[in-house]
Length: 280
Ligand code: ASP
Image (tube, rainbow, N blue to C red):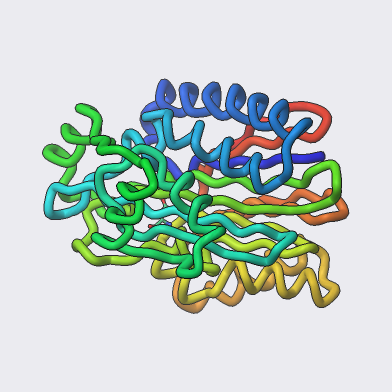
């Protein structure tokens, strides 16, 4: 059994050691909780549970504490890929909910598995997801004072391998920060979040680059076709060089291989197989 989580990139890392430390501590605690949960739950249940914990922690740009978009609203996106059933479900740009990953989980059983905007919100309300404002004073202040910063990333994700050898991936985001209303993140696409019986990947970074690189699904396909996780990841990242793609990935295979890579420094992530390891 293995689990890896990420807390996205954090541009503050160069200057704000306190934030970096707080994020590392939070990841350490959450990866432990996720690993404990995995003892008695499937990989799919575990990635949902673990991402919901990350969404509830306001340090990260997902769920509570998400970035505010250019028009002052918060829109959340999340997706779940079950590597056993090979079903993908997701929610794109939903407003005023607490845990978008739980809505994505609910959609696994629906006929229409990826919903966006108002329709997504209506589905959420009909299925018992009550009104919730994910804004924090910190994000409002950042929105008001840092309007000119170009990159403010911090998506969360989780990949897990359960006792039965099944894999799953879940990813959740408030977006890249200050985007146009209507902009679609990679996090609720198969470019940003994908798993099958062989490998599971969750991405963070600039959604446009991740979609252009077809990252998660490409890596998983390459591993399925015989490459190692490392080879598949490196090749996929090399293919993003011509457009200076900005991406970070966490990956896990059914054989228990773990790999992590980023094109730019400062992705925070943590893994738990026999011991907790926290990285950035
Ligand atoms: N990938 C996310 C997006 O572009 C942002 C992030 O990873 O922080 O919406």
